[in-house]
Length: 280
Figure (cartoon, rainbow, N blue to C red):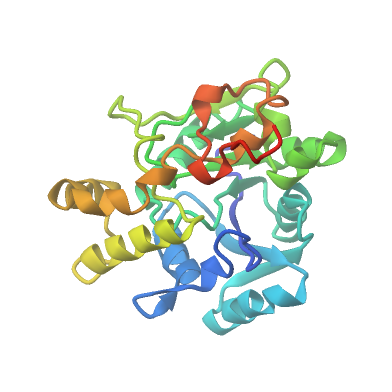
């Protein structure tokens, strides 16, 4: 694939989160979380178009209306089949490659996005899929996955397991013998992926993200990953706001099915731990 390929970033967003309903529309300094994240993504340089991909459900009309008011590209697709939604959005916006960035990453660093995309552009002929997640090393919430459309189409046609459809890319990265998997690791050599949780899934995460924005945004709207780390050095109590969920991710529900994921790659939160009253 040419280094001049048309790259479309797709941010999937919905209001139906069970753990934190309407999380993408929660306010941070007077603006919805989704707009704060899109502001950060838009500061990256190595892409051609940014698209919000929401669902066709009426409950997600507010997301579509927000995009219309703000002049943002919006695509509406399948409510639960994220693989289909990403593929159809890629077709609609004439993508040569789709970049998957979930809407639960409101602290994502645009420099990280550019680093992953630059690596992919320089190595597009060598890899079928590039991310910074297999294995992860950046603080959790800096998720970037690049999928060329022919590979996304193949997954779209062949993936049959529910989690492969729901999470878009497992059909690809969980078959390293079939697909050429490229990974971008944090240049520091550190692994903060399980110790630093900057993603948004629980009320405690929202408290953390909001605190970071309130501390940094008024002085430097496009604060960096390094600015956050410096803040946490100065105010370590902030990291405790959501520390109980550090290392928690969706893998925990599919450890018996995912071949490239081990129990060490995830953590089960306390409220999901079996008790004497819970069937095992």
